Image (cartoon, rainbow, N blue to C red; front, top):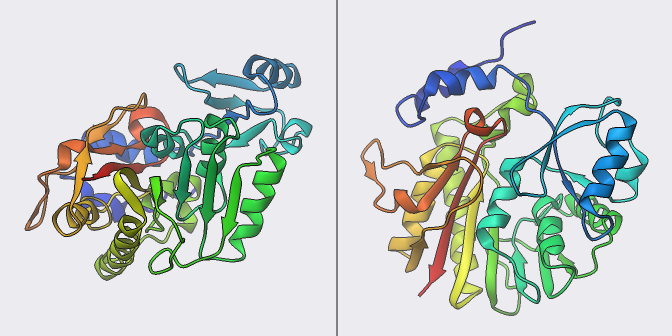
Length: 303
């Protein structure tokens, strides 16, 4: 089989720890991870049902997260339990931004780029279907998958809207906002190495400008003392630490140090001529740390 195109990632050799291990991880396909939907079924009961079918599941720590080691079907969504909404296929790294936001029952939360609904549905589960989640996506066609997942999982506390996260008003302010911004998607490489496109320097800068516009709009909708979680599934500092630096220096947000129960490193301290003072408060998840995709997370508070 043809080797996946790893040359693209050489630019990150100086910032990714244990870089050779990172490259090795990119040469293996990313495993499926799943999250039990405890709104519909008890965790142990579902695990028992799937194991009887021939699934081999590996639980991650104390989280409601399982790596699918073996399965009797070609895709983990090809079961009656999936159709009934008993579980959701979601990478472990994708769960991290929700854990960083620390949703609680009764919260009113804005998810600014929600489709297809991985993080929205996880928020709803942790909130036990209480409070309100405003789930927005600018792409109307993607809202179909979001609505489908919400219905399948039995979620009742979500309002779906179709607005431009860069400029649109959402009418009210929120105590908690999740901005899982559209990005160059480098952290999803293992899902489809041969279909991966990534971005060049110009592309990263363009995406960063879009992300900063979303960040600026998010701050407009954040209550004083509120928390905003910014995340991407990519590695380039322009789309990550640089956007956080903009939020701190230009928008007056304060970086908050949080810990999550998923192996990670801190952010990048320097990239080219840019220095990032708040790198210690940033979180980076790499595939060689925990057999997942990649993710960047920063928690920011409005003073």
